[in-house]
Amino acid sequence: MTNEYRIAVLLPTRGRTAALSRSVESLVNLAKDTDSIQIMLGFDNDDPVGIEHFSSVLQPWLDERNLHYTAMTFEPMGYIRLNEYVNTLAKKSSADWLVFWNDDAIMETQDWDHEIASYTGQFKILAFRTHNDHPYSIFPIVPRAWLDVLGHLSPHQISDGWISQNAYCLDVMQRIPVHVKHDRADLTGNNMDQTYQNRPMLEGNPHSPRDFHHPSWSLKRMADCDKLNDYLKSQGLTPTFWDNIKAGKQDPWQRLRENDVNNQMRQFNIRVN
Image (tube, rainbow, N blue to C red; front, side, top):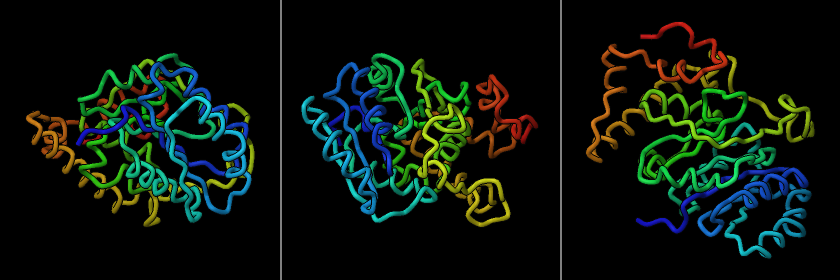
């Protein structure tokens, strides 16, 4: 099936006004071809501040520029189910690439969309340069086939970790020369608002069944890798990295450590076989 757009930007947002506009404007103003971009916005239906700002300020701005966008409302699920917002926005989109985005993210590179589109047809997880070159794809850039094969982008709240770890295990991670500023309170001191402060994280307690590192979720990540690896083989490719991991011949975190230029993932410093 042919997609209508090259890139869909997936943007759940809550309670943000100026930050949301600044974020979207940075994407639009630095894009090479806005006709190839679909902006997918998600609002909680109990967020009058965000919805009013969109309808009175951001929507007219988008319309004046003939930009392609969809705005959806959700029954509130909270940050703890952020992945469900993104999964739904992705399924409603029609694009070759699905880009996670935040209302406190600011694009800094001209023609960012052209750089992403240059990888069309390749099964890669692309990664912006952000967070002091964190080895994860903090705002994952995912090929449509990932969603088509699995039926989700991530089944867990920690989507960047889920997608990035699987990308490393499949050896499909690709850093691109596109810079993004994450204008988050703990990184820059900005946007220290209720939205930021009310962001529980399902990470840090591996004994909890909902925690990212609980063994049950590790098994699910492995199952996703199996499905994606089978898809790559069905496309005439001959991937070996994941097969060698399963056979005990390959350190699963070799590529992650190679990309961890600032030693931000200390838990992966020990070789895992």
